[in-house]
Length: 139
Image 1 (cartoon, helix red, strand yellow):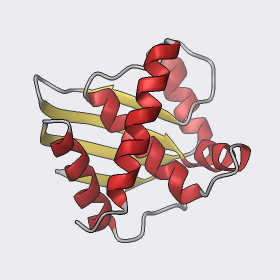
Image 2: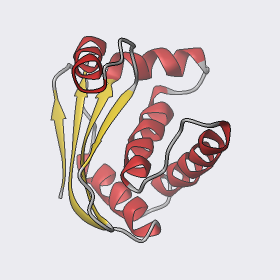
Image 3: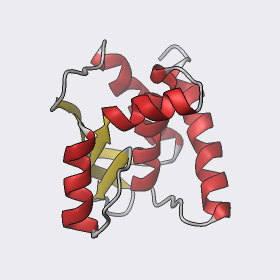
């Protein structure tokens, strides 16, 4: 099951379209969906969790808490809507595209993809782009 929670004014339109897309993303990587909770929140909420759980005193667009076992995909994914808006502006792309990128990014982390080294970042970006294209395909 995929559920969405909103701790900010932002909300997804047509949540079912996102559920269908994310289910397709999971299928495309050979996983089985257990439970994913997306929490859309502010910079400050994500910053506090980053400090508390990861000992990082930095803003970030996403925090992923991975509960996956084998290919049974589960996790909590916190997304800073503030950071996504800023990143979309900085990279001169539509907010909608950036939110898709970050949502896919979280799922990819649940599959074990990392983004610490240059090679990992390159693979992550490639996978994100591949998954964003799936959103625009009729489910």
